[in-house]
Amino acid sequence: MNNLNAILDILKQIRPEFNFAESKDFINEGLLDSFDIVTVVSKLEEQFGISIDGEDVTPENLKNLATLEDFIRRYLDKNES
Image 1 (cartoon, one colour):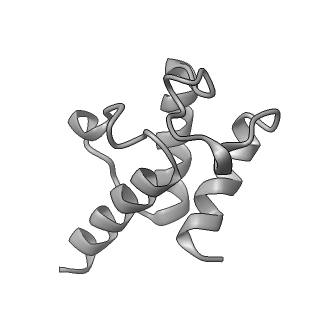
Image 2: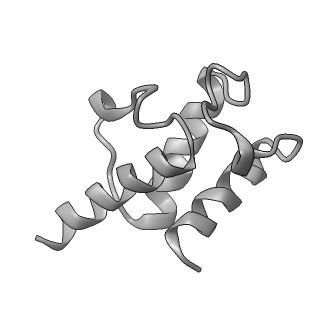
């Protein structure tokens, strides 16, 4: 499973009623609330074997699938170096 599919799967587990693939802004469109964000971060850490810094949990990093994929890629790249 590639990163994008894994991220989408996590989002669908948390909020199956929403179409995350079509959303441009998860938070402003009301797809994720603060509790959901904590859950997403926890599941991303578990799925990808990373530890996300609290200061990086920002609306900009969790805006949509593209920003989330870039966010995860940065952490994965950091772990490889």
